[in-house]
Image (tube, rainbow, N blue to C red; front, side, top):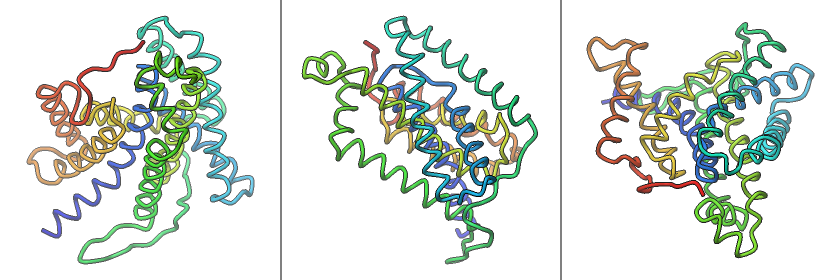
Length: 293
């Protein structure tokens, strides 16, 4: 039993990273109907900015909020300058834009920092924590606490503040929100800023484990898309729960399913996602359908 709990705990640590990215995808999807495939590259760029600031002598816990603020500003700028111009152009145009952003940001990071992996220092230090027969590294524990805090803050933002209520109103019914005096464009821009900030936290937490490179978040983004599909991209809670389930399923499969090693274990979460989608096309927590208007 202890070993099983250990595998679940390890899966939870990675699953929350997928959940964070899925949450960022969900925020944008609910507001625009757009799947932002560049979310991983936007997050990776934030990790590079954090590394540059720390190498310049800025303390990590000062560099992190600065990076998050810059990331939020970058997300708002992308919505204002690029996404806004394609409003009403259709989902295919928005999808093409997100792929172009993915390729463009990846190329930009490769030019500036090369494609060589870089060591990203853990802000939580080294060491091992043991309790009740279970163990986890200090990096895992710090990451877990950070991700849970960010998710809690995001939940409070959307459910307990006027800003969150306006974001939800515009996402759920843009026409009615506009009639009630809400500026749809403004709140969509804020939604992009929030998504970029959440993605920044995910990348900074993942970078010490994955090592920093332009393609660092490419694979986690695929798992985040699976997580969003599993939990329901139209539900922020569903996106996070989907990420946790993906992380745990991946970890358990690699340990307990015969013939599946670390590399092949990814079959299990995708099989789980496919099964859920066949039974509930909108995902575990998703609405029946989400329409972009």
